Amino acid sequence: MFSGFSISIRQFTFSILLFISLSSTVFAANRIDGIRVWPAPENTRVVFDLKDKPDYKYFSLSNPERLVIDFKNSKNIVALKNLAKNDPRIKRIRTSTSKVKGTTRMVLELVENYQLTIFPLAPAGQYSNRLVVDLYDKNKKSTLVNKTNTVKSTVNTKRDVVIAIVAGHGGEDPGSIGARGTYEKRVTLKIAKELAKLINNKKGMKAVMIRTGDYYVNHDRKTKLARKSKADLLISIHADAFTSSKPSGASVLVQSPRRANSEFTRWIANREKESEMLGGAGETIKKTKDNNLAMTLADMGKEYTMGSSYDFATHAIKQLKKVTKLHKKKPEGLSLAVLKSSDIPSVLIETGFISNHQEEKKLNNAKHQRRLANAIYIATYDYFTSNPPKGTLLAATGYKKHKVSSGESLSVLAQRYKVSIAKLKSINNLKSNTVRIGQTLKIPRAG
Ligand SMILES: [Zn+2]
Image (tube, rainbow, N blue to C red; front, side):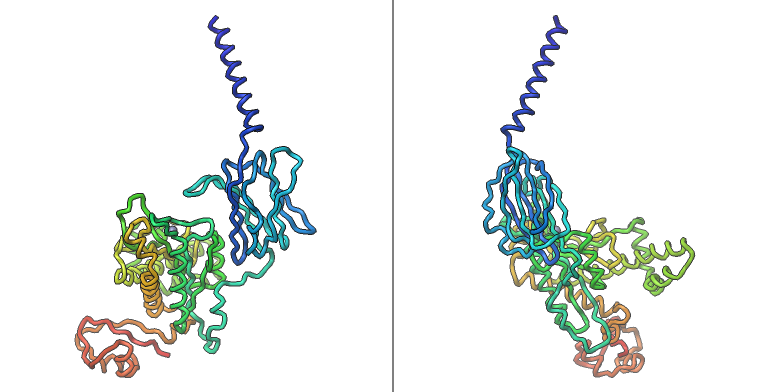
């Protein structure tokens, strides 16, 4: 009795399941709710918003070039007419008839044949299920990146110090969103543009913007672009967010080392002695046949990069605290993807908390954005004039620092460093010839 009853329950359950799975294919259709097109210098990203996880297939056709995507059991409610109006790679997005009932067939009419990446994204933040289509230019030399820079001084043979600036997020990725509706991606781009302007106005320095508009640049691409532009430093600009609106203030993050933090701090303190060797490690690595030595040196090279990052971060904090509250008073060592796998000294600057109401307001304010940009700019200038890379104009024209000790006068220093008293006075903004013990003076490097 019991067993017979239980069998009939099982059969009953089975037939319900069967009914549900059948009905879902027939009735419970997915829906395309939105389509966004994000043109970038080297690619276009198209994002389909869907009610449920997409069940899709795609193929390419040529003459003319097309990408066809079939969304199974889906209907489309998006008006397609002007979607790709401003895109250089997509002529038109339209639907076409599929032989499979219930399938929505999307056709992207393309200008040429692109390298293709298609992947679904799970719901996140303001977004529901998505299907992302990336169309990358093939074999095309990338037009890097800052058009204003190409005309910069070609007279001197000494190169510029190059600072790559990443405005955090962009395009499909808005970053944090404040209560007033401020998008992190917009704030970061504005600060980044101000920073680039200040850097480009300085002789001997050049900014390269890794993102110049509202589009997303993935991590590998960022690193590649920064390397290609031979960046001496990579600065990522962000604005923080927290679940509570309480925290506020800026912080600067550097890549955390694998070794213990205290040990890292000790190493940072002692690295001056070794920095020459570490900085030149590249050549030795290339030449040596000793694999162990090469690996050790390569590791030390990484640490050298981290040391420089930390140094710059300290400069950045010193300047930022003049224009904004600090969230953290020391550089934070974090293992973030943006800072990883880079042989370029890299820092990430959180310019403030977008989740804090007052700070959201400030981050939106053009004047405050300029102040933040200026603080970061002064940090780069200070850092590179005291640590100029070899072969740069700043190495020839920058200054080093000297702390005045007892018995040292301006004329003694002028003589020792082979520079005129007048020059010393002017670059240090000194009104008289008096210097005090402990005062730090800028000393011009020999030209
Ligand atoms: Zn961010």
